[in-house]
Length: 130
Image 1: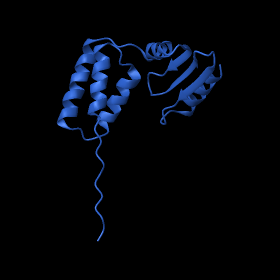
Image 2: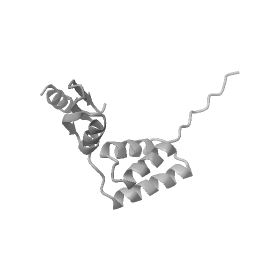
Image 3: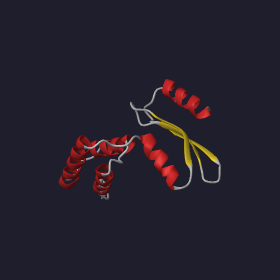
């Protein structure tokens, strides 16, 4: 007499629709394109999600998008800061960045894709230390 558990279904439709809006402006950075793509391929999608994803892919094929670096620099400028250094890997979802806030304080951050090699992790650590 067990309780049947239903698998939680989540929708990525809102994320795809947001991405469409950004892509129409040429402002959907590669990191976010990959994030949407990964989420889309990791779940059973609804017809609405499939249609929205196909629309997004069509927009991306027609309109150049800004780089991850351009996105970071724009976001920092909006809050009165500056991006001093950033590096985004193309072959996996990892990044290293050094930013300066509007008060002159520096912040270092890095995100490593969990499937990266030890060489990539070592390279990221060295970049973060520079």
